[in-house]
Image (cartoon, rainbow, N blue to C red; front, side):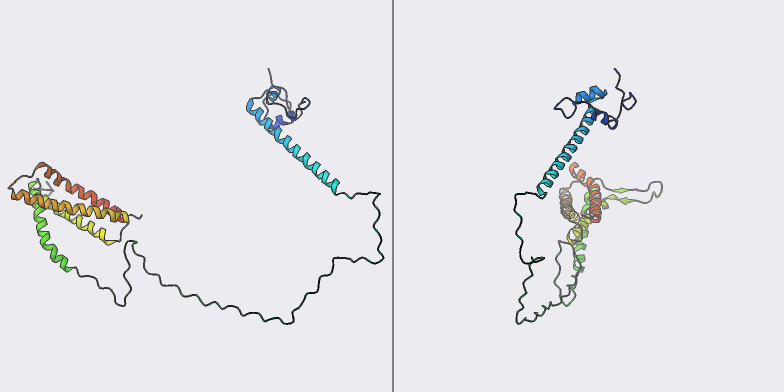
Length: 291
């Protein structure tokens, strides 16, 4: 079975070229549009193309119906508005005087005898100058009250005096605990500087106590983001607690005459340099971040 010849060709035609032939199809009485099956049968096309063709025919039919309805309404309106010529209507009586042309004259405005003078405009006072804008601080910090005298910073030299004996005790305790847990003298540059030696026990007080002091400063400074301040707070407390436990462990071991610390103390002390490195790197990253 071959396709019908449309527009001089038997090849499948697009919907635009099939539309005139679809309009010319003969329809039975009472049917306004062909069915999809008939379109498929007449033009040898598939269901999608038949649906598209039928949709376009429906759109054209709707446009024609809308136009016919509008024309009918306009015709009815014109018939209603047309002047009626009824011979039975008696003519209007002729007046003996001339009819006025145009609308009634406007009434004469009443002018008051005395018009009060216009009121004086209200004077608006000038706006007050804006207050000086001060520096913006951290949301958690309080602004000191403005006084005539500049604030004097508190002296810090008593802290140095208090820190000296604590430094000696902490240093000796960490170094002694490091010796009991396997920290000792090493040669970090073998083959390069064989005579150079260092005692690795000093890494414990430098790492743990220095990080604790720095984290405490970041926590109380109030000049860092909230995440950095929160991390510095808890890590400073943890570092100070670890330092206190290290001092307690050293003095208990020495008082008991122990020469080698138990394995669980050695494990905890050996992990301290790695923990300090991780917390220090995290705190430095949070301090420089912006949230």
